[in-house]
Length: 113
Image (cartoon, rainbow, N blue to C red):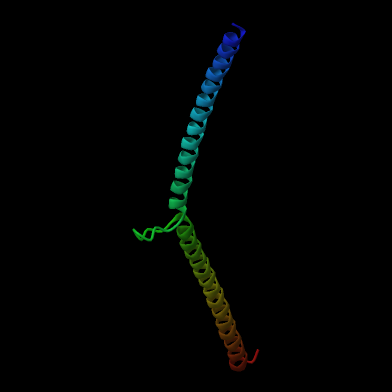
């Protein structure tokens, strides 16, 4: 009879272990599904960041580069316009001063004062 009790205990332990193994396998399956979901999410994020050669659409990284070059061009254009304005003001001031100097010199020649 003691052999029967031992066999029953062994069978019960095996049943318990089988249940534990089943639980572990279910958890591993859940982990794998979560990992696949995470990988899908990463792929989706990368699809937004990188160019899509199939559709020809630009990714966020490429768009950022385009925006930066446009901003640089606008800043350069504005800087060039401001420089041109300063040059025009400088030339106009010089010409105005030259005219005033010539007029003053001419006035002194004519009226001798």
